[in-house]
Length: 78
Image (cartoon, rainbow, N blue to C red; front, top):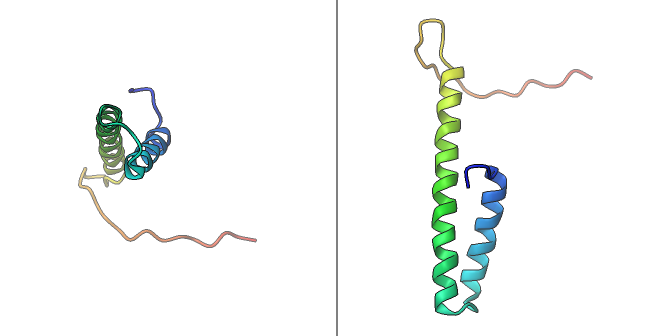
């Protein structure tokens, strides 16, 4: 599962949620897709945690302190 992209995991999670919400699956199948969903959710959470750490590294100033600042979008020059 480590080679799955975040977007692919999220899309599969959405499919699982839709299938479970529909309520048409037999109990055993529901349990199997639920287990898959939990695994995918954990993978997504780990991916987001790793992304957050990468962003924090990029946001450190010269002294190594993490700084926060509002995100601003610059107008594209036309």
